[in-house]
Each structure stands twice: as C-alpha cells, then as structure tokens.
Length: 162
Image 1 (spheres, one colour):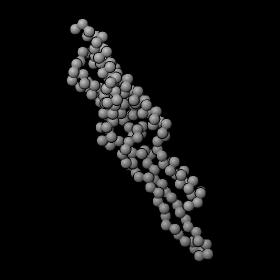
Image 2: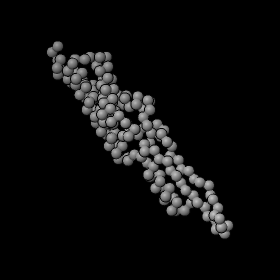
Image 3: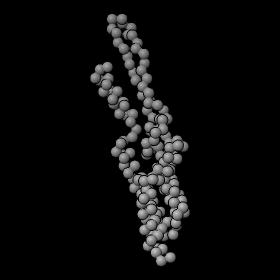
Image 4: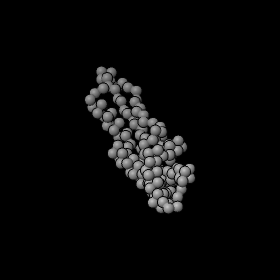
C-alpha cells in the first residue's frame, strides 16, 4: 500500500469518528456536576423534612432517578446518543467496500482501480433500553456520601431539639 493510500485511509478513519473527545469529557463533567449539586440539595431537603432510616435512603434513590431523568429529558433533548458515548453497537457499521481489480482494455498497461465507499453513521451508537437503565442509576454510589453529609447536617440543624 502506498503512502498516499495510507494517508487517505487515515483521513477516512478520522472522519468516521463521530465524537470529539474534549466535548465528551466536558459533557461528562457537566452531568456529574449537575448530579452532585442536585443530590446535595436533595440531602438537605431530606434532613429538613426529618426523614430517617429507610425513608431517607428511599428518598435518595428517587432523587437519583429523578435527576437522571431530568438530565436525559432536558439536557440531552431526549436524544442521549447525540451527547453520550454508549457501548451499543452502531446503527450502521463502518464498512469499507473495495471493488475487484479490473484489467484495462490495453493488455500492455496493467492498472487496477480500487475505490472505497465508506458508510459512516453520524453517531457511534444509540441508547438501548439497557443503556438508559444504566444511565438512570449512574451516580448512585458516587454521590451517596455527599447526600448523607447534607442529610445529617440539616437534620441536626433543624431537628436538634425534637
């Protein structure tokens, strides 16, 4: 394979990448910030309302689910595959089709024509039911300590003399 063919192949592969890594990292950082803030506020609400034991932890689980639904519905505009990378297979696979070599009409000149048609899906995958379910419980363990911190803090502040 010649150098020009290698460069052309690399350019096609670069065009096939549908996500800009810096944007993906920024989106993940912003979603984590939204989750962290929302669940800290939910911990404060649970403390002010005087929730204890399993009622408080149930409120935490509902808060995580509600926060993630809001992120999917509002922030991702209902199309999460546009903003998040998923492990799902692509809708259309990335394929390079090569035509068979064809001899020229003049037998003295042997040339081969090779054309590549690249089918590129604009996204690397789509959100399946399993992806949505895993996204909805995402952040459940990461934000538990901040929820508990704010929960106990506000419970202690508001209900100290009960």
